[in-house]
Length: 118
Length: 116
Image (cartoon, rainbow over all chains, first blue to last red):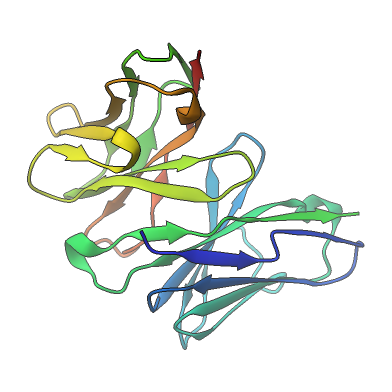
């Protein structure tokens, strides 16, 4: 299947700092990427939908000024957690949707980024 | 409301035995259905999907799933479980033509434990 990478895989930061997570689709161009948050032993919570060249669409309850999303190219989306606090500690997973549409369309997921805010 | 349910938090099977991980859905319209597997501290890996056609879908690692429209189910199956199949499994659905095109709705996940 298609490959989606995330960087970094783990990050530890101090409270109040900002952290940027990169998501790349390595072998296809993704006009749409998604950012999820996952708490231990729980399902994925969709945070936002990232569309190349336009503003991200945030889910209800997700602060767009805190979780900045930029989808600057067809293979790269970034999530910046601004002024991070301990409650932002979580596992963040991105996914990229194949552009072909119809039955061929599939979402592929990155390996995730573990964020720990001290 | 659109939803996906995985009624079992955990499924335990012995190695070599068949396994089933259950999933039911409630959506309007024709669903695209997916199964993903997640190993500890990793992202989700795509296993298989149902779009249209044959109700029995074959996927990666010997897994298969059967789409049952009348029962609105999409159970994941494997004839002979391996210890290495132990992981967290997610069922997901996407509905065609909705305003949320492309957004997956996930079940709560089922932990599969295969014992030697």
